[in-house]
Length: 264
Image 1 (cartoon, helix red, strand yellow):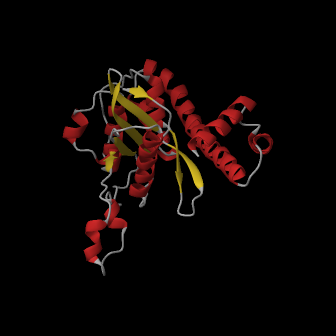
Image 2 (image 1 turned 45 degrees about the horizontal axis):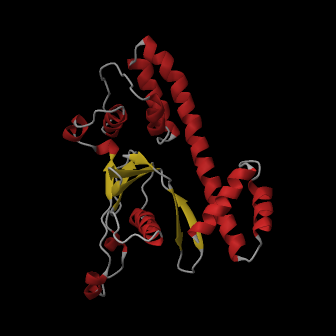
Image 3 (image 1 turned 120 degrees about the vertical axis):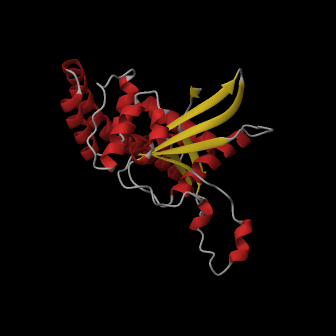
């Protein structure tokens, strides 16, 4: 598995281009051959239109393969990791979003897409037992919270702090605070010393990640609008720099402009 760029572009019903970012995108390869693409979307809240979002991500990936001259497409699969306490109650199927009660004969022509949602807080014991990584600590903690049960695990140990911080930062602040209380009550002195600073960083990291992602999307979409409005590249750069120069370097803005042209 290799990580790859998480940016993709799509056009809306009015033909306007937009840029979107996945949380994680992994390419599965055998030698030099790509067999599949796996996308991970982290969700802290239920999104009734999640099948549409997943469809956008997947279609953008297929369109990119086609634009690069692929004779055969490799499959794209997106998994949604949902960290909320409320059980996921939104549809997992795209066809459920269509209002076809008066036209059932149209159903056979509708695209079939069923998304994979991992409802972390409501995983059963068998699913939890299969987990071997640091993610297991988060999953066990959330499942206990969803049942209003006390979590009394063995002393927590962590193999990959940075990756674990990414998971923790997907919880809302209430969830992070509760997890911090659990560490204080259950962790050894050594774990507490490591984790207190770690969780504080996770909170800040979560805020920073959200802000950065929003700015990237804003910059990319501004560049697209300016290009479609007929501005010269130098003008696009100046206007983008005036708006986002305090967040991105000149080189980064120029890279966004070049990538947006390639995706047009």
